[in-house]
Image 1 (cartoon, rainbow, N blue to C red):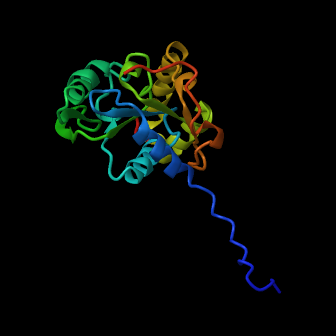
Image 2: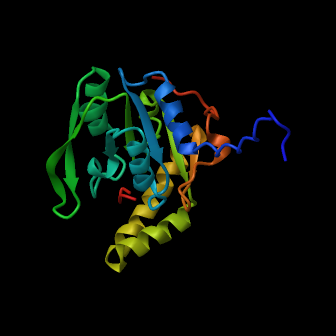
Length: 218
């Protein structure tokens, strides 16, 4: 029995949620695109980018998410940077809401638009979100840690055999893109593509190179 007047022992505190820590970090970053902290969620197609971006957006209180598969096309898998810059980045940098056209992968043409409201943090998710041409606008690159073959298997299982030919062509284009313009070395945060958990050592880890300023959805 504890001696009279001795305070009861305190229970150990629960471990901090890494996602909460990441949210705090992102909100504290300097703006990179006008008043916006633009955050890229990059990784191989099938690595879980859209799922994680959705979780992170919710944790940020409903942060807008730009999906790069809305800006790419069948014939321009990676040639979407002009559309992203003109329709999203430049308006946000000027302190305005943005609106971009949305590509319909069934109709094989742009149909409709998506609004991107001005917000303290805006997410851009998709293969190549952390590419060279976009990095000057970014406050942080997040990389989904799942190797290409495993991500492709997941994507093929999800999409079914009718998209096998697309995946074969996509895999070649993705490999060529990351060989020429890798995003992972610039990622300050990495997320396990299987569990969706943030790699603990990367919360607060600086990028290896400083930042300035699927196409099938995963």
